Structure formats: C-alpha cells, structure tokens
Length: 219
Length: 220
Image (cartoon, rainbow over all chains, first blue to last red; front, side):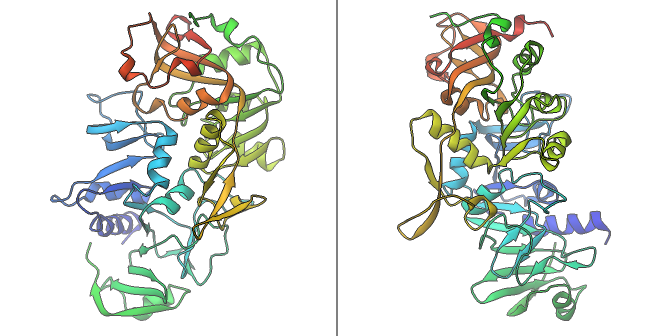
C-alpha cells in the first residue's frame, strides 16, 4: 500500500466506529477522510469547532457560500438540520461532553493513552487550536494514524514530545491493526492479515497485549 | 440610539499599546475594512487577542506582517508563517491558548467572572504557572479572564442600535469579543433601521456594541 492507500484503509476502518445518531468531530488530514466512508445505515452529525454542527461536503459552484468554512478554513456546506453558533458555545459542546467521538492524528501516543500532536519544540510550533479541548471533552477519542513515521516508533512506552492531553486516548487505529488503551496497557484487538503479531509488536515500542479473541482487521 | 459612524471616526481613538480583540477564524468573519483603516491610521505595539492570525495577507494577520503587534494571544498560528517567525526570533511575545479556553477567557472577561475551571491543558505545558483546583476529585486549571480596550468584529447585518446578525460560520469569536472590550466596533455588510431585525433572531444584542460602520458603504 502506498501512503494514499494506507490512509484510505485506515479511514475506512475508523468509519466503522461511527454510531448512528452520534455527534462526531474529525481532525484535519487523515481523520477528515473518514467522512467519505460512513456506512449507509448510519447517520452522524459532524461538528466543526469554529462554530456549527451539520458539516456537509465541500462547496461546489452551486453551493458556493463565502461565509462557511470548516475548522481547516476550507469552504464547506452545512446540511439541512444543522446549526451555527459562536466559539464559546462550540467549545461548551466539546468540553461539556456533548461530542460522542473525536478522531485525531498524532505524532506520538503512549501506553497510558497520553497523546502528543501539536508541537515539536524548536521545529514546529503551530499551536494546539482546539485539540486539547477535544481530547479532554469528547466522550471517546480515536487516534487514526500510520503506525510508524519513516520507520520510527510512534506508539511508545512514554511520549517524549509535549503532550496535548494525558490519558485521553481510547483506541488507536493504524494500517496494522486496532489497539485499545486499557488500564493494563495496550491491547491488540484486530490485526491486518498482511502482518503478523510479531511484526506489529516490532513496529510498536510499547508492549502489546494480544486479545484472546484477536480478529482480522477489515477496512 | 444611533451608533453608526464613519470608518475613520470609528477607529480614530485607538492608541499605540492598546489591547485589541479581533474576530475571525482563519479570516472567515474578520473585519477586514476596520483592520485596513487601523493600518492606514497608523498604530504600533498593540496586544492582539485573536484565535489565529489569519494568513499573511488576511484578517488580523495583516497587523502581524506589518510588525504592529507586541504581544499575541492565539490558539493557532500555523497558517501565518510570519507569526511563527516573529515568535521564534523573539520579536513578538506569543501566548498559545487552547481554543476553547481562549473563547471562555474572553467570555469570562465580558460576563463579569473572575475566571473559570477547565480540565483542558492539565498535564501539558499549558498548566505552567497556573493554579490547580480540585472539585469533587477532578483536577482543573484556573483560567483567568481576558478583556480589551477595543474589539473589532464583523457582522452580516447591524441595526442602528448595534444589534447584530451573522451569516454562516463568521460569528466564531465575535459574539464573545463584543462583550469583553471597553469599546466594540462592528463592520457590518449591511446597516438597517431599528426594527428591521427580528428581535427573536438577534445573535449579539446591541448592548455590547458601541460603534457600527457600514462596511457596504466603504469602498474596497
């Protein structure tokens, strides 16, 4: 799989986690692609933290409206039944636990569910935007990312970059498998049949526990 | 009460060193004409509170690229390379604030609150220097209010009393900023007579607004 295929594969698998009737916030990049694979029998309401729920597809010539952008600043649409509000309401929705699920990318995740995804000191300091609020406020947090970065581990015993939030991550979904963060450590619950458990462990710095009911990961 | 004024009149008493809140999310809903008028008038050493700094050529980013900002509070500066450069080279003092915390600090400033408690930032660099308070076994950070001398915001429509209506996602920080400044100046695309906005559908009540500029009547 090339990078594009990897990302689509991960996005498809994440989409299966979407529950009917839930309110979902997707981060920028790979997580945004999840919206392309929502199962037919599932209806979700996407939140855009700059101030609305009911986030729809990108604008076309027919739906052009200069007043609507998503949290990445891109021109988007709002679906019938959506609602606009200000930033304090938007983050009240987030902090107050009214967002059921957020899907975010990460630079590092560790076995305690800590996540680092907003800065590399001295190199990349764009700011955290809404990520800290989402990680603390959303009922469920899925990290969707490639398992390693240029061969380097991203799933660690302990993050060494500045944290975006501590103990916030519930599930990690990569091209190799699905990993749940539990009190005992990281539990591999699904594995992509292209890989062995040994290969997944080798690509993971933290110790992986293997679910006794380990399933095949299907996108 | 007629709050409608000309654009030069609206910004003329803003002074060097003042603290300004400027609305807009990546310049979506930014008061571009008010910012231009301020640049034309000449200003420096301002403290800027704005969730991001737009792009180099849009929104509050225009003040950054002209080096008019001494201190910045923002949640995200990744879309304006000049902001990052000024921060890294120590030219501008930048305090990065989580986006929800920034909105709520502004709301606290405008709504007479001494601060608020949030879990956002606990266990991260954001907690440095902040008081931690435990309520019912949960640890929170005490975040303090933000206020400003002036708020510069944009609305789709304003009446002469300053009641505002926004379109689409352009509201973002404008509603809370309007409450938190000594003087709130609105650039409205359209100004209408009192009574033409249905009071049931006012987004920001005019009580928070001091001056309204008819942006539709300002050329370019």
